[in-house]
Image (cartoon, rainbow, N blue to C red; front, side):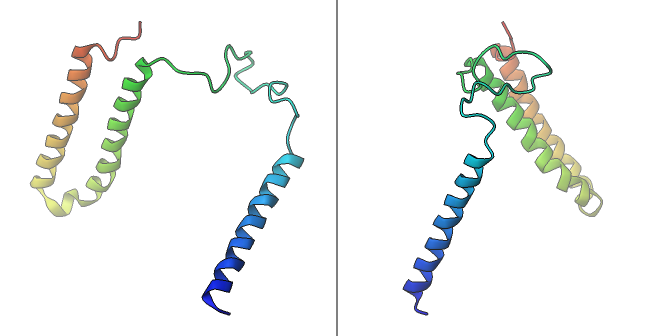
Length: 116
């Protein structure tokens, strides 16, 4: 089989798989009207649509969350190599944490953490 035929065969398999997944989703859907099926929001009726726009203040909260999420990404491997690296690893991690803390203090000072 030539390379061109193999690529076309693979493309055909992918397109058939996608069509099959859409077909299964269409068969298994809950309702034709997406608003008829209410989500389980701890028993409360939703106040607004799920894809409504969020207030701009959530952008800063998201950025802070991502900063601390990245902190955890770097801290887990750090705990594995701290005994091998010695005191230099501790100094580097506290330097990293100081930079993150400086970012939080700046965000706090600028009012990014105010909710109202």
